[in-house]
Figure 1 (tube, rainbow, N blue to C red):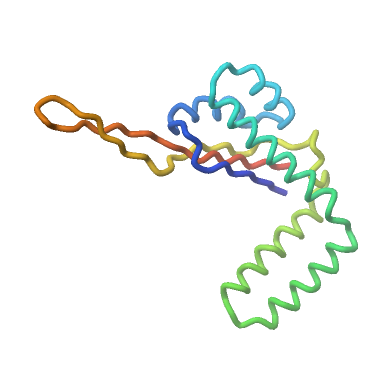
Figure 2 (cartoon, rainbow, N blue to C red):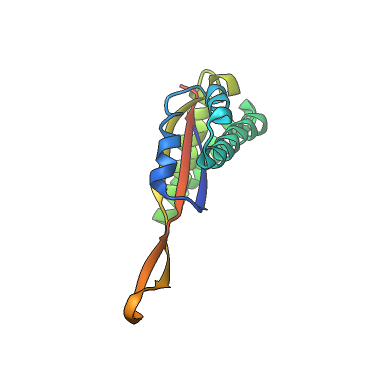
Length: 156
């Protein structure tokens, strides 16, 4: 099963953030936290915060879902899918059903020591545009770049 965390609009360029994000791809989650603790870059703090959020999401799902409750929820979702005509709502129910079934089918059920960083992305966000005065009455642009960080953990 996969768990994700997203941090949006971080005040750093995506290019600088990608250098940090590449270092943790494919590592176990706990080892990735240890690596980020010693990386001397500003972006490592933001990536570590996002990774900690993803691990907390996994622990929350693990503690909140038990076998009987999930099987009842799966049966309810199958009934809702059969009875609804709204395709957007049906897609949402189908997505939730797949998530619950993947948790039940998962052998490790999101144990923190078995989580692996499956994906780690740093994508560009909106850019703030500022202008500074230049010679002869012209203006030069200053681009203040932002980025989004997305980390996906998997227990497979």
